Amino acid sequence: MFAHLSDLHLSDPSGVRTRDLLNKRMLGYLSWRRHRREEHSGEVVNALVRDLKRVDPRHIVITGDLTHLGLPEEFREVSEWLSELGPPGGITVIPGNHETYIDTRWNDTMARWLPYMVSDTAPALSTGITSETVFPSLRVRDGIAFLGVSSAKPSAPFLAIGSVGSAQLEALDRLLLETGQMKLYRVLLIHHPPLKETLGWRKRLVDAKRLRDVLRRRGVELVLHGHAHRPADGYLETSAGVSPVIGVPSGSAIGLKLGRRAGYNLYRVTRTGKDWELTVESRGYSPESGEFVSVDTRDHKGGKQQNQGNRSQSGDQGIQLQHQSQVGD
Image 1 (tube, helix red, strand yellow):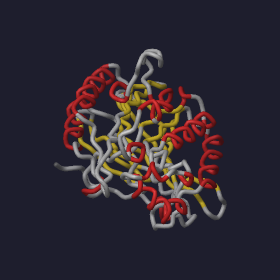
Image 2: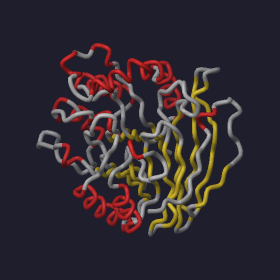
Image 3: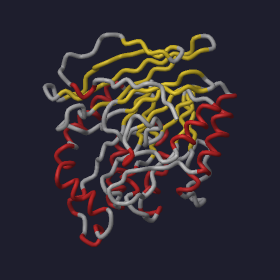
């Protein structure tokens, strides 16, 4: 069993210096001042951590946006939080667009999270790993191949777009082929949704079609993403069958907007003969109890979803799944 979290926005940029805001970060800072500092709650994060400790998943994946503005101090804060959550071998992290508001020095920012991002077979951390060589990453746990790609790229003001890029796509193509030949359950981790129906033009994955082409050709069993700050369920036809594409809401949101309350997913993967069976449990924050509770469980068999009908009556409309049609180009 593994857990999927995203868009936690853990850091506190209240002490940012004016000189650090003389760029696109000013827009992010104003957004944080206006509403994000009220929406993303430390109490919710604490409840999330308590729930993870109770559930005790074998692995945790986090699909980006752990910071607000991508400042070096924020990366330090998040690094400390990650170390308290668990060891690097049990947590896989990929970056989101908030980690790359502007071009920054690798050693001052994402390098702090390197133990949580590198592949199992990565060389010693002192050998000059850079942002260009970390992704795509590959971590294998209990027959599951977690393949991490970075769609985090600086973008123009008022945009939150991302891209994977040719180098990552070519490497991902090879990794999908190799892990498929090894009969592993392949899980792609990406921040931006690869299905074009999920978000609008301003927040899109620019090369989503090229990514989908790779996934269709090589196959993938499951795609997990964040970025939308709401639950999202979709499917993609691939050479491996109909593969679920699932997004989770922010893990720290108190839900000031309808459909945006904090949640995360638990995944249980079992092999049935030559096929895989996936059970997904959504857990959402309950303001009444101040804890996370189970709100939905569903099975994926042969690419077809079966709802189990045990959705919580806690009144958390933010956890209602949004079913989407199969993607088209």
